[in-house]
Length: 51
Image (cartoon, rainbow, N blue to C red):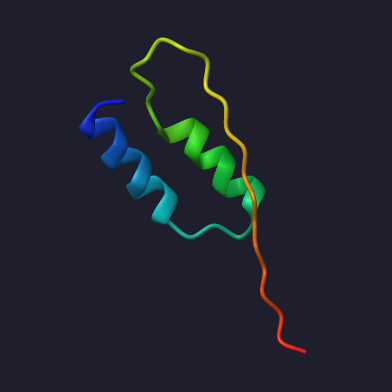
């Protein structure tokens, strides 16, 4: 991954999204891969609730 690709990925990941699914969709849509491989993305959302 080049520096440009990494900076683009970080900028896209920082943008707010209403839910995890939309954030992951945006990451796959707007992040370019320069490795020639098919993209694969796993997302985990952690929620903290105070009782």
